Every structure is written in structure tokens, then in C-alpha cells.
Picture 1: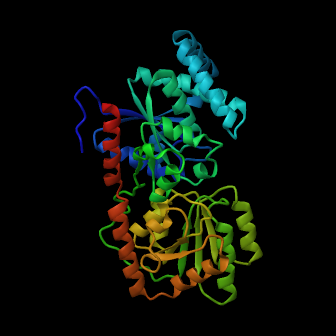
Picture 2: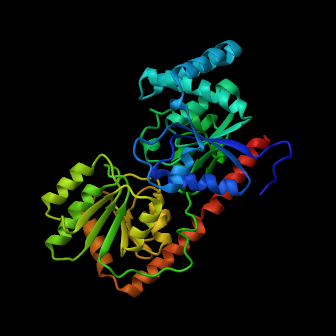
Picture 3: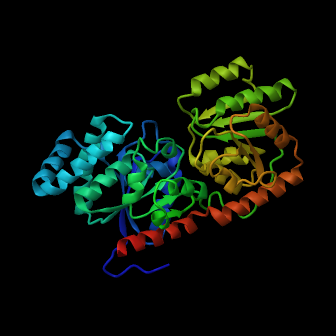
Length: 410
């Protein structure tokens, strides 16, 4: 790993739309791992999470994060005025950029006015903190702000693309422009890198790097032991993307055929009322339960208490919770989409099935419940080894550290 030049401090900003957030624990892990490598990370978020922060580690991040939309309208307006008079040329070019983004965007005009205002405030904050590079998670609106900051203040930026939202809205979020203007772009899987490569000229492909999301020592256990219970667990936001409604219907198939099981849904979200109604409709109240949001340690215990982990996503990048379950020695049942097959090997560390296929999902659940403990043990060991090799947060943070060092040297 190259050493930073003495004149280049290991300091940078991180920008996220909402932080901390229960489903973004991988960002916290990444930041903390970078700090152990000597980086001084300044956290910025456009806003906080709109639900209770239940994890103690996430609560600790609240006080370390500067929130743009917590500022008074007067302070943001003052930042705009100062920018207009101090650097009228740069402000004009940034306004033209904002208008160009707006014309191609799937979001209304006023949103881009807000992004420019946020960029004015953040640009001043970055200058005051002497930060010359900004890394962003997700290629949506926070990367719009980073692109405008680059116009306003010359602060370089990079960003991590997760999917699936970015790939669903390539034109609407101006993803091509963002990739072209960034110092480098991170994809969390080879699948994600390939989607980004489709957007730009081959001469720019070298700037697209794969850095996996990682798990920490709480999940990277030294040994794994199979669980012989009949419990399956699913962890994730209760929403259309994760497919829990289909999971409940598949569970109803198992119940009607006399298969004994327990299904735990860890999480919450906008689809909870509908999923609770499905549970009642299928008379599964004694077999399926929803825990609501849980902290990291509770999630870990729920996974350890299950025979297998199931995630029937319709769309995905590469879910971190799959890595967590596999690291804890649990075979996983998930869909054959996006980056999932890069980690999950069918019948070696889990079962893959087509997205949206209820019968195949029910069959995978049945197979997991009927698989002998010795086979579950071998599958768990295979999965834990794969995660340790590909998704150790310290290793992946080392890759990012090298990229940041190179970006600051140029």
C-alpha cells in the first residue's frame, strides 16, 4: 500500500443521505476500519434517519456527524450569498450544472435548487476543515451534491454504488455524468462494476473499482456450529424489494403440507401492515413473527438461533446481511440475482432460486429444513470461509485506503 506524501494528511469527508441508519451498519464499519488505518474521517449527512436509532454503535455516530438539514435556513442562505459574491464564476458554473442535471432528472426542479444550496454550505464546511476529497455512499442525491461541490470548490469526490436503485434510475439520477466526473467509483460486486462499465467509454473503465462491503470481528467467528432447530430467519427492511410477502406465501405452502417450521422476520418498514395481514390470512400467527427494528447484537443472536437464513429479494446489490449470516455459519437461501451468486454457491453454502418464484422458494426452505446437521455444518463452514476471504472489513478498508491515498496525491 503506497504511503501518503508528508504534505498530504490522511483526512477526508464522508457524505451519506441518511446516517446513521439501521440498514447502513456497513458504512459505519467501513469508516471505523479506515480510522484504525490512520484516516481522520469527517462524517456529513444530508439528514438523520426518520426512525429510532436503536443500535448503541449507531447512536455513538450521531454526535460525530454534521447534518446539513439541521442548519437553519438563514445559515444555508448565508452560505449561498457568500458563495455568489466570493466566487461568482464558480457559482455560475455550478448553477448551470444544476440546471443540466435537472433537465435530465426524474426529480422536480426545486430539489436541484436544494442540492445547490446544500453544496454551498458543505463547500464552506469542507474548506474550513481543510478537506480536499469527499467520498459518498450511493449514487443518488448525495452524489448530486458532491458533483456541485466539485464545481464550487474544486473538492474531488468518489462514490460507492450499491444498487439496485442506481441501476433502476440510471438516466433519472444522471449516473453517467457522475461516473465521468468522479475521481474513482466503487462497485460492491463485479456485477455492479459491469453495470457501470456499460455507461461510459472503455477508456474510463480503470476508474471503476470493486471494493466489497465487509463484516467485522463480531461476525468473523473462529468456528461455526450448525443449528438443528426448525427456525428460519429473514433480516431486512419490510418493503417490496426484499420479497417478504412472497416469503409468507411460501411459508403457507409449507404449513399446508405439514412441514414444521418457525419463521422470524427481523426488521420493520412500510410493508409491515400488509405482511401482518398476510400472516393472519394464512393463519400463520403461531409460525411467523416480526420483531421490528433490532440492534446489531440482537440481529446476530437471531441469526445464530436459526437453522438457515432466507432473503428472497426481487432486486439487490449484494446484501450485507447475507455475509453476516454466512460468517456465522448459516446456509443462506436467496435469489439468483445481481451480486448474490458471487458469494452464494448453490448447494455448497446455500440455495439459490429464481426471484419471484414462490414454489422454488418453498422448495429451498423445505430442503434446508430437511438437510442433515452434518451437511449444514459443512455448508456453514464453506460460507464462513468465503466471507472471511472476500468480505473482511479490514481488508476491504485497506483497498479503499489505497484508493484515497492515490486520489489525494494527484
